[in-house]
Image (cartoon, rainbow, N blue to C red):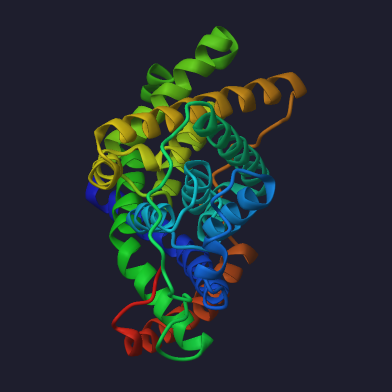
Length: 345
């Protein structure tokens, strides 16, 4: 019986996530196909408002794969981008990217999405300022004459290659993330979450701090990618975990062991420790700030299960969206075969 429940829960999550993930990947790919990356990379060397905005924008339309994000961050560093702009790019790519936002909306609704975006931008600002404050090392600039133009196909062909590459890189994390989320929702009683995460009303600031730290630790231990973590974040939210705990879990994908190991290979242990310190501190502070604002303003948050609520007319809408957007995804994935050399940034 348990296996039937697990299979049903997994299938239900996968069905309701099909169109948001496909839509996000397709939209991201279409936008990126029109952006000549290297023409703006050279403008990211200075720490000012324009360069920060460009970094965040580039990250938001870039690849949703954590490994690709770390690799692209290294490329930006080699091309002369400052550490602050590099971190802004990586945080934006993994937390406010198009696919991530659509997935969060599909699972958790518009109000949670608004709070998540506000917290993510606080995370970006804090990381940006902390990287400047602790004087992260300057890059060893490698001069490049590459104009960032793809050598194969028109914008549509490039978009399809982006889509195929991103799906190939993220599908394992997405499927594993859905499996973990469905397993946890079936096997783990809500009382366990109450023991692991403190009640905010009983403990106040200490609960905010504890829940944020536990959220980060869970993200590190699960090794998930940003998009793959959305489903488990939804389970945490539906089981009453505090906003800060859920946000900390969602924002910590760059702190997992594989990501830190990859950073260490690029920059060395010393720089990676400083980078992890900036990320950890910024996540913690942004989640504490968000919890404080929510507590002070008494904003009411609905913890309804968006998947379970999708019945009747909403079920029909989900079916239509899956057929239309899922069909578009199949077309783009098939068309992307023509760009087997890959073109993802």
